[in-house]
Image (cartoon, rainbow, N blue to C red; front, side, top):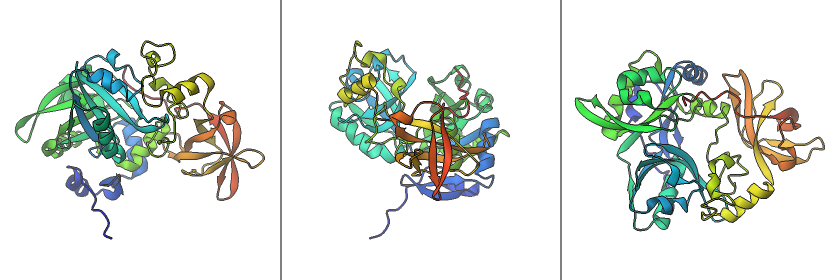
Length: 375
């Protein structure tokens, strides 16, 4: 049986022109790195500005009278309190309290929301939304690309290119237009990202994506950045990757995402429960979860990878690593994963198995590197 052909983003040819190493990712042909290399791409984003192609993500517009209350049944967030052009992080839950996906929700109008969902999950997410939101207009914005400009110099670049973005602060958005290929092109810009740095995500019509990328790359402080550095950047600031650090078998409480559950949706709140899996999630808020996602400080310089087992002093398995690698900003290994609740306190010490050797690790507070969002 032939392998399924990889999908491509509107920037595929540009990636190749820039010398990218391309790999399969979430069904797409994506750049993992450019000639600069993962280490330098990572550090460049921390120090200046990096441009990421995130067009493989799903963009969805949902509209209709009463959509706020209907969507609140699928996410444990008080969307009624979300002002126009503000965003919120959210998790889509299932009946067992597990996480179907994590996403960003932006209010565009009283009865209209813009969602960005993970590439691996977008087809099942769309089916889930269509099943639970009958009668509402659901537009799959597959004719739009998504670019992310991240880093401390991102703001100065956007000040010149899309001035409306100047006033944006973390999790705020706006529409603005700029000339691309001789046409005035409307973009939707948000002050958000996946690196822990100040930065933006820009939704642009797909046929204008190359022109926008070229305009951004023309700035001296901007370099194209691949998936390799995107992963190490997000890991250093303790951000989850769906399918690795959380899945349908993981609750938001286990994942350390209690902050994503609005207080009004918790026990005693005005909008208590009334979302999928609420009974299990609220019970874990009250009584604690059996395991917890934590960050690890690892002895030595050897990085540990996803799947590595964690053991106590008696050699008993107490958890596993879900994300791990080298942190270029820190100059050493970083990792996070799940451990039994008895080992989740800051300062807890145990071991990770690395090539059958026990390497000491300690639970430390995340993020490993300070987040620099513009608030």
